[in-house]
Every structure is written in structure tokens, then in C-alpha cells.
Image 1 (cartoon, rainbow, N blue to C red):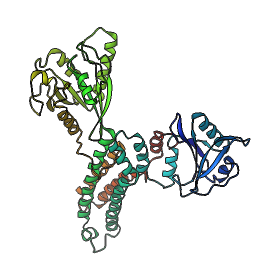
Image 2: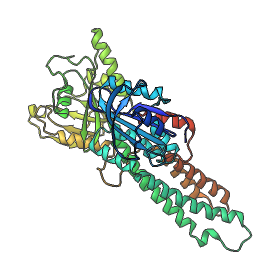
Image 3: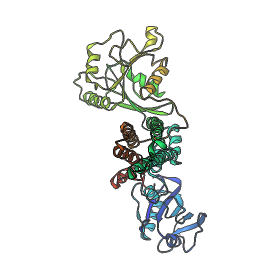
Image 4: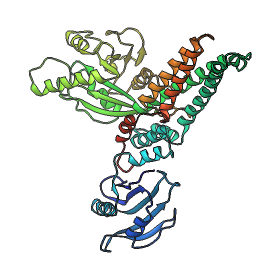
Length: 451
């Protein structure tokens, strides 16, 4: 429990019908009485009241809610002042709360206190931010599942099984003179294999959840006037980029996000990579090269009638070698070709070739399927949960330690015990049972103020 009281505006900035001030701390009933003119709120019961300043003048009126510890979100006393949603009145109310002894909350400090007071674990705390930042309905649903503890339940179950196995190994180490072979009698090898299988399932679902959370970054590259902007407009379903027959029309990067099967795809249309003396276009080309370096996949538009001409080859030479590539032959309608998807016949050693028409939309579904396949998306299901990079890294470490444990023979019990301990430690980092303070600071600093 913390001794100081924190306060923040919990609603988004700007005008609104309702604005909320949230406070959390110790023994907040006197503060509630001071701001409501001596009224005593009942726990978890809405109190309609005026909110008063230090002179007893009314700042606003609305609803006061009081949640005494430990039955609150943070585990401390919590007060919510629900008034009118104007910037001025909310800041006047916040100033009054600060006069009464509160201090301004830091980003994520309410959620951090909930974590430190064992109301939620770290994975659940992170899912709050994921829910706020969700860029698709699927991501929002998965964030709610993590917030309700689905991800944490899987991790805790895995940790419990690890503890059981560690207990057996430690017992064998502590009582080497006993005739009973604890490990064989308890089928320790079988338990270890079951642990590896369970962890494999969790890792798969976490990787799929990470795809849903992070999405994919795709960059459209190709010679000038090959149809990149037309393809972006077709994928976006609206005119987000200017399209003309004049080479160099796109002089800067144009970014758009689309959603495919719930997965956010961030697409960047780039300026045609070519030699030019136009200073503005040169800056656009430089930004295009930066976008290509940061992308997960490049959509390379090539005119099959021209093939790999000098301009296109120059573009390919500028792309990162490890960048995934999908080759696209646009304007199939002008050539009288049928849209198709093939894993052969690439002119630039791409993973596959898509023949389509951005103008008519024919073949766009084939491209969308190829994009989802590139990131390994297998579709939303109820077993998925949103996962962050640090979760994936922790699960990978745990898997490696279990693999090392499986390689230990019966005469290497000390090593077996150590690998199991390290695997448990990696899993515990996900829920925050053993997490460094500096990592907590980084995680919660990215939250909204008021959360």
C-alpha cells in the first residue's frame, strides 16, 4: 500500500458529456467529504453532489463514487468524480484535489498500483493498454481475454507443473541414499515431455496473438507509374493516394492501414525509386528507402512486358536482402489475363507471384491471402491471446531451457534442476512474479495518464 494519494483526469482530453477525475490512496473518505461539502458517500453507491472549492463555492456537480480498500481496482481507497466533460472544469476539479493533498498521477500509475497490490498480474496490466490501443475488433476481443486472465491462467498452470517436477528432482538430490527413485516412480520424463507439449501450444497461440497485436508492415515499391498508388487505393477501398499517368506523382510516402481477417496491415506507398534532380522527390525517395528497411514484406510491382529493366533492377538492389518479397503483375485487365497466384515464375526471386488488376479489383483477394500467409496467420479462435515481444522472448527462453533439461541424463540431476529453475523464472517474468523494477518502469510509462 502506498501512503500518498494520486489523482488524474481519466477521460480523454477535449469536450464531452462526462468527465472523470480518479483518485487512489489511503484513507480518502475525508477528501471525499471535503470536496462534497461534508457529505459521507456510501461504498459503491452513487452520490449526486456539488463539487466545492476551498471557499465552498461550486466548481461543478455530478456523481461521486467511493470504493474503500481493498475492494477497488488498485486495492487502495479509490474515488471517482464524474462531472461535466469540459477541459476547464476538469482541470479546476483536479486542482482542488491537489489542494486537498493529492499529487498528479504518472502514466500507468493506477494500473501499476493494482499490480503491486496483487489485484492483477503484469500480463493483465499490459492487456489494459492493449485494449485501449486495439486497432481491430479481433485485437480488442483478445485483449479482453488477456485482461480476464486467460493468458495468465495458461502460464500459471505451466508454472505449477514446473514446480511439481522441480520438487521431484530436488527430492532426489536431497535424499540420494534412499532406495526409492523419485524420478522414475513419478514418471518425471513423461511430465517433462508433457510440459514441453503444453509450452509449444502456448507459444503458438502467443505468436498468433502477437501477429494480431502488431500486424504487418508492407511497403509498395516499383518503378514510377507502374501502379503502386492504384493498388494502395484498391486495398484501402478509397482514394488515399493521387493517381496520374505522370511519373513521379507520388513524391512522399503515403501510409494507410487496412484490416485483413482482424489483422492490421500497415501499407506504405513509396515514391518511385529513380534518379532525379528534383529536391522534393529526392527526399521522398530517401523516405521510401527507410520504409523498405523497416517493412516485413515488400510488394514489388513489375510490368511483365518490360521485365527486369534497369529501373526495376536498381530498385531491387536497394532493398534489404532479407526482406520478404511478393511480386505483383498489375493491369491484368489491359492484357486480358486471368488473375492468378503462383509460387513460380518470379522475375525477382520473390516467394510468389500475384497477377491482378488494381483498377477492377480482380485478384485482390489473392494478394490478401498471400499477405496473411507471409506472417503465418491461421485465423482467430478462442484459444488466442494478445502477446507482446517480451512475452514471446520469455516463452522462447523457457522452451530452450526445457529442451536443455530433456538432454540431461539421470546422472546430471543438478543441471536438470537448474534448467527447470530457469524455465520457471522465464515464465514468471510474464506475469511479473519475478520482474526487475526498471522493467516495470518501462512498461507502465507507456500507459495513459489516469490508467
